[in-house]
Amino acid sequence: MKILTITFLGVLLLGCSNKAKAVIDTPEAPQVKVEYQDHVAGSVMDVSNSKVQAKLVSKSNMADVAEDSPCSITECIGCFEIQEIIHFGSNFHGQLSEGQLVEAEFEFTLSETSSDFPELNEAMPGLNVGDVFVAELFENFDEGKVSIRLYELKK
Image (spheres, rainbow, N blue to C red):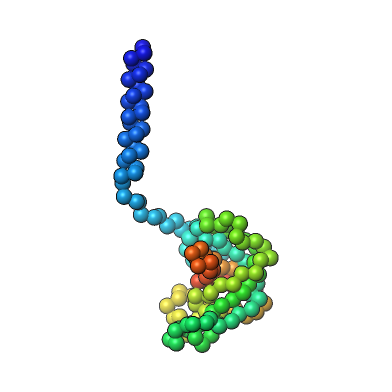
């Protein structure tokens, strides 16, 4: 009985150490991007991002922007107050709260988009100070910046 128990433990330990080594020796697996259909704004949303309802407080031009960029002629920076956090993304670690003011780059500008971005499936109406909108926040943790691609104007 002792020999059987020792043999079983030896095989178990040897098997565990081989599995651990196999994991260490395997190349890093490709990162899987998880997405889900977002029915509020009608776009596919990355589950690592958070989604908020917010009110635009101010807008401004970007500094150091290429001359051929739409941001050279219209505002792309918006400061907004978070009214509600609709979805906490997997990147969320308490960095956002209701009532907080956040500055973000609007990748398709704060203006109406039909002429500058005809490739969008649906043109965005543009945002004015005081407008309430829903958007997915893309956070660049290395640079400490937030950007917004698409938004839905709330009426």
